[in-house]
Amino acid sequence: MYDEKNVVMASLDRRTTLKFCELPDEQQIIKIEFSNIDLSLDVPLKEVRTFTLRTDMQKYIILVQKLLKYVRHFIDINGMWSTCEQRLSLQTFFFMLFYTAYTEKLNMRSFHVNVTTELPIRGGLGSSTSFA
Image (tube, rainbow, N blue to C red):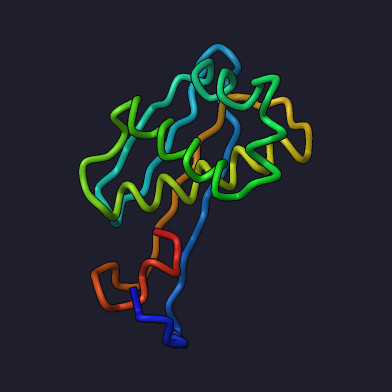
């Protein structure tokens, strides 16, 4: 993207906020809200568990490129995004979720996550290095 050039980005008094809460077990969803990019999803917990509980998951965790490809496939086959910003944000979110769930051996339960940011999200502004 930047032709092998180093990029430094700083923001003064700009905040990214993540709100997290568990949901009742009977809901069986992961509710994702990224309002800055107009994204609100209810992902069935079963779909996420199916991906994270694969017996061959270790090979994806060891090779970062494989995990990223796996995450891209997951969000694409489930039709979760319609803009580049949404795709990038979902890739970041599910990459971290799958990696953490596997390495920490988490028993994933229903939850709601809401992320907002004051950082501008547009091409050329460094937003690809932040999480929306």
